[in-house]
Length: 172
Image (tube, rainbow, N blue to C red; front, side, top):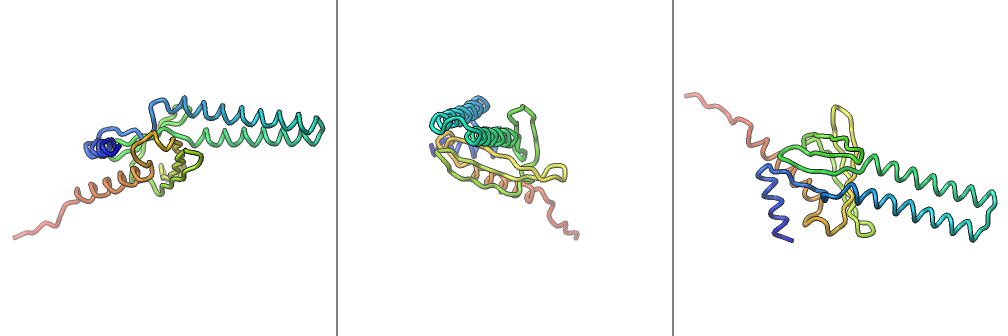
């Protein structure tokens, strides 16, 4: 595992593409959404069987289904596949709309572990507007934390930019 992390960092130094999400990410996320919806649907069905069908139970069931739909829709808009190549971060939404921006435009990166998943959120600025994206990985999918890898890429990009600045010119 440590060798895979070193390999990913070496690829980043060599300006090769490093994927922060697995290859079948879109299919995994869609199965995850389906699982959430089916769990909600079965819970609502069990609730209706236990409580009986009344106007109150139907309104509670509809509220649960609408809340689940809104949650899935907002996650669908925010979740992206992410790759880093050189000084750019390449993101692709579940609708296959690509976004390419400089790694230095990332303002903040935060990760949280929940139910065996690493939820990494990052904010970036593109075309003068602030954007927000989410990367959802299983904790054992990658040999490194997504948050630490993005932060290392930002530091490397800033160092590279600083090294390209011309020094003082001395005239004799």
